[in-house]
Image (cartoon, rainbow, N blue to C red; front, side, top):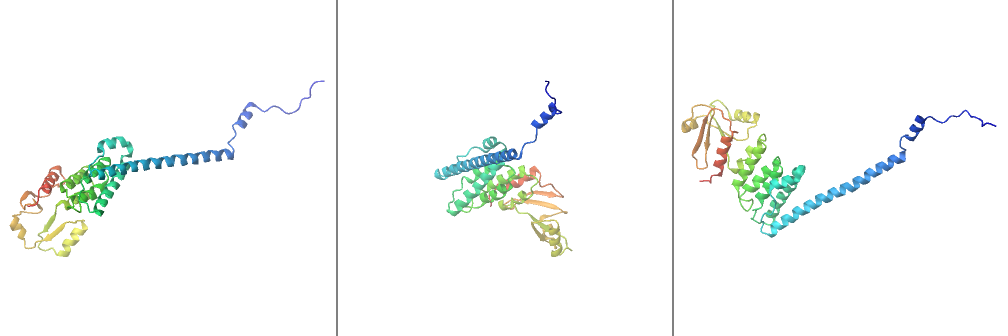
Length: 268
């Protein structure tokens, strides 16, 4: 007797294929999420361990500096930057922190030997030429007379010059030459201007240097001026080194070099 045929037919191949490719179940998604969390838990501690080892190495180097009369045993900034790859700014932040700690610990112990201050600042600003606080505060640390600072105004000027070269648009670095001995004084010879008018003029234009008034024109006779503006560059010895009639670009390399040279001269 022939077998009876039913009305059911085998599913087409395409249907079997889609059943096999059905979306993953919810437990599978949980397993994948859990695997990602475990991976993060493994990677993050490794990253923190690497940072700890780096900090430990820096502490060990600075410990050697103190033990060996603060002789600098650090590698050159260029080599360190090359080895740091894209992490050079992070390394600069770490070394800048060490600069502050070094300066603060010396002051706390009332020690006058700050010979390692300049090499550490040099390393920091080589790793990250755009680290502005290192230039601004580092130059102050260098310029202050002993025992407060390193007593190295020439190094302070060099550091500020480097900052200006690397960050020409940051005008405050030019102003920071002031603590190294640069003084800017303007003299108003307007006979009709009042003190309040001069102050309002300075405030409106953001002028922070000293502005004097000479309504009697004594300075005109003494310096034999012929018009406005006129600028006199005077050295520490009181001798006029340069006179400019009319406007001038005092940010030019020549004028910056002149001012820097005068700041390095000893006071008479």
